[in-house]
Image (cartoon, rainbow, N blue to C red):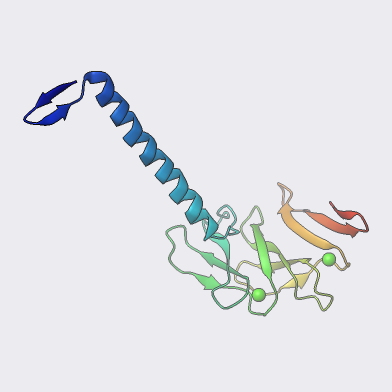
Amino acid sequence: MDFVDGRKRLDGGARKAGRLFVVSVLIVALVFSIGLASLFTQPVSAAFPGANGKIAFVSDRDGDAEIFVMNSDGSGQTQLTFNTAADDMPAWSPDGSKIVFLSTRDPDGDAEIFVMNSDGSSQTQLTFNTATDVEPAWSPDGSKIVCSKVIVTATGRSL
Ligand SMILES: [Ca+2]
Ligand SMILES: [Ca+2]
């Protein structure tokens, strides 16, 4: 270690260690800030664009979860469901003409599977049971809909 102009001059090893320390601190700060940010964001539900190019998504901007559609550039956001229950997990039919989704609007309050036209018209309930029906999806030819059913047992939940 030398002294130049009264200041300590670090040798090459010490400078590398110093740089490594600074880079490490920056990486830790970055990871921490990403983790902190994720604490304050909630996951959102959205579907791959339908055959019509539109994206179906869920927003609680009116106070509870509702289904919306928009163009792939974010324009033309249109609300399709209007109620105080949770409407979630939209999925486009293969031809883009319908959206299947879950809703808790049933008087029992548990999730049921519904289907509607792409403009929100003709909302029709498809399941009627006391289980939680979730994650609806279409068969490739659009002729069938599959969903998961959460059944609460005395020992816990099972799908
Ligand atoms: Ca709703
Ligand atoms: Ca149900």
